[in-house]
Length: 179
Image (cartoon, rainbow, N blue to C red; front, side, top):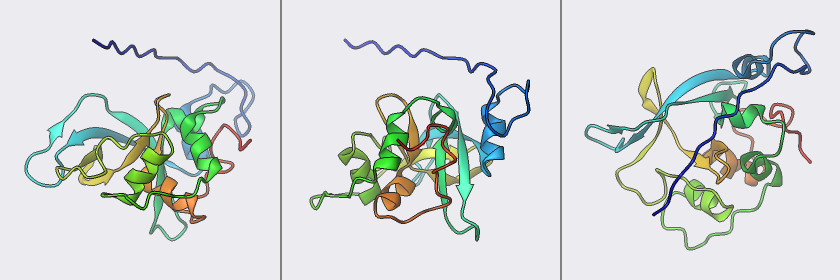
């Protein structure tokens, strides 16, 4: 039997570029200052029809839209503000080329698996699912989650691996800088 233990770590008040001296660090304020939109998303299974199963554990994501508003990339808020390397940030910076000619499902989901993450709802799962925007049940985000619980938009990551920016380039937006 496996036992999963999740430890929550609070963010301390620290000086951060773009914040006034003495101003308390806020992950949501950081997202907004970097040009993002904070969104609460709820994990749901079965979004491809019928009544989806709402799962526990809503999370906040920071969404960055392209200048024309036609594309986006979403990053889990805790991934965005992490000062130390996270697997999601490193995967974004690494731009590992996609190499899975045997992929039987979504290429974004296959890419996520290729680089060590998991796309809990994507791949060949016909029922569908993902991170549903709390204000719009039709807005479903497919996110790649890594073993350190960092997460980033599956398709934003996939396209970035081919040099295509969806939403905004996260260089200079992720708190952990490109090594």
